[in-house]
Each structure stands twice: as structure tokens, then as C-alpha cells.
Image (cartoon, rainbow, N blue to C red; front, side, top):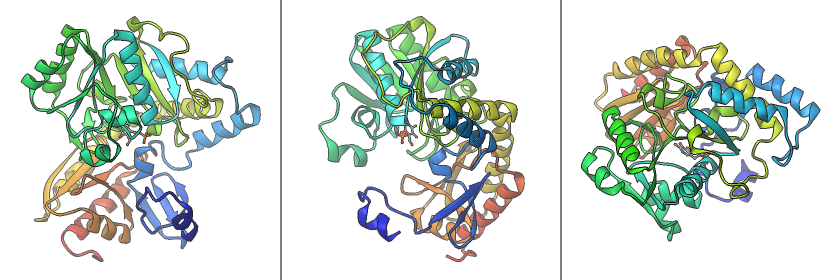
Length: 386
Ligand SMILES: Cc1ncc(COP(=O)(O)O)c(C=O)c1O
């Protein structure tokens, strides 16, 4: 801890816990204390900690070849393209691989501009798309944006409830409209299906691309393989990352077949499509399919949401979410309650100043969810160690 404090860049506020082990939905600290992990590396840990499918895939691939840039062909990458497209709608046709969510958003924005020859990108208020310059320009919160201005020109933010505004902003120079089906960082707000369907129609009529940022909602988190399926949407481009490779860094952009190929040499990534991440991603997707993690997130999400809604506390303003992506909005700042919850053996995240966010591994079981709900109840009714 001392070394991290002394030599770290300083950008991360820390929870004073040193984690040493993880398995399934649990992690342990250096003193052997057990926690239910609803942080899951910020939503990365979809298939659970130390998932045996992932361990086996990484081990086997590491022994064969770890370095193979996109200049050469590689079987794991080829099969990942194919298997990823198998869980996507049939009209999707190509994949670009990178290493993180922000990189996926950067690539999607560049692809939208080069494919349409247009400049404007329309994003939503409360939206979060990452912290690199392009992704940050699509992100809304002034707290993240203002210290780094000037940002990339051409970005406009609209209200996620206001159809008239959207219709007036998306025009013949709009390359794309980008949205998170459930706004995660912004406070766990599932968007209205009616609004998103309307946005899709406006994009279609104006020739703008419709981009679903599924970096937090993707890979079964919301009770469908991807959240756009839940909303019955047909995005032109989908951004992916977080849990896609079971914990290894990866990001991806999936594109509609009819958009054609991206012009050669207009984008790239040294580590993108590396064999180790590709092998891990294939194993993760296989685990999700074999264990129907989408249905599991749907069923357990209901149990979790109902449990949290039944907590009788005057501190709670709202409980909302989809699948196993859940937020409890408080009338006060959530930080002290998250600390008290950690003391009770449950790790959870903030989303905005007043929301407690739960992004557990989708392998979490009923007993673990009941434990979490019980502890949240204790903390919010003042019976915890707070
Ligand atoms: C919806 C969304 N988009 C993009 C990102 C950025 O991903 P990364 O932190 O991997 O760059 C995040 C991260 O939380 C996210 O939730």
C-alpha cells in the first residue's frame, strides 16, 4: 500500500484493502477476510474470478504463442471473430479488436466519421464513454471534461428524454449517435425503449450511424447477451470491452456488414487481436453460452432488485437496474455507506455521488445475493457497523 501511494500517479482514490485472491463472486483480503465482490473490477468480472475456462485457455495459449500482431494471421483471432459474430444479430459482419473500452469508443467514432464522411457525433447527457480524448468528448460529465479542454470538436450532447431536441440535432452532417442502453457511470439509468427506438428511426432517416456502447451492459450483464437486444434495437456499430475476455484487457467494435470494410491503414493497435486475449475471450464467450449467463442474470437480477426494493429505509430515493446491473440511489452521498458495506463483507461501487452500484460476477448465487441484500439493509437502516 505504501509503495502504491508513493509511486502511483495519484489518479485513483483507493479503498484501503489489499486483495490477494478471488474465486467466483468472492474475493479475499490479506488477512483472509472474505467479501462478496459487487465491484468485479468495475464490471469486468462477468464469468467470475479465476474462472477455470479462462485459466485453461490462457495457459494453453501462453505455451504456444503470445505475440502475433495483426500483420499476420492467427487462428484464435479468426475464431473469435466468428464466435463473437455468432452471438450478434445476423446482419453484423466485421470486428475490430483493441484493448479497452475507451479504445473501442475511439475506434467507433473514427469509423463512423470515415464511413459516412460526416463530422458531428451526438451523445447523451449523463453518458459515459471513457477518458481518452475522443471518448471523453462523447462523455458528458463536466467534472471529467473541463480540466482537459479543448476536447475534440463536433460533439453535441442531448437530453435522453427529449425527442424534439434529438430530432433537431441529428442532421445531414451527423456521423453517429452514441448511447449506453443503461447509463452506468452516470448513475445506473436504464433508458426508455421508446426514446431509443425513436433515436434509431431518426438516425436511419438522416443516414447517421446508431452506436450502442455495450462496454458495461454487454456480455449478459442486463439479462440478454447485449442490452440492445432487450430493447429490440438494431445498432449499426456496437462497442465492447470489460468482461469480454474474462479479465484480460480487450475491446472490440462490431460493425454492420453492409457498412463494408474500413479503409486499410486508417486505424490500428499494437496489442489489438493478440492471441492471449483472443483465446481468453473465446473461452469467456463459450462459458457465457454454455452456462446461459444471460438467463441467469435475468433471474438473479430480479431477485436482487426485489430484495433491494424491499429494504425499508428513509435513506433510499430509488432502486433501479436491469439484470445484474443495479443502482440504489440514496438521498445522501453514498461513499460512507459503501465503506460501511465493505466493513460488512460486501464490495460495491459508486455511480455519481449518491448511487450505490452493484455489478457482481454473473456466477453469483442466490445465497450470496441474499447476503448482500441483508448487509445493504443493515447499513441503510443504521444497524451495520456504520
Ligand atoms: C459505457 C462505458 N463506455 C466506456 C468505458 C471506458 O472503458 P475503459 O475504462 O475500459 O476505457 C466505460 C468504463 O467504465 C463504460 O462504462
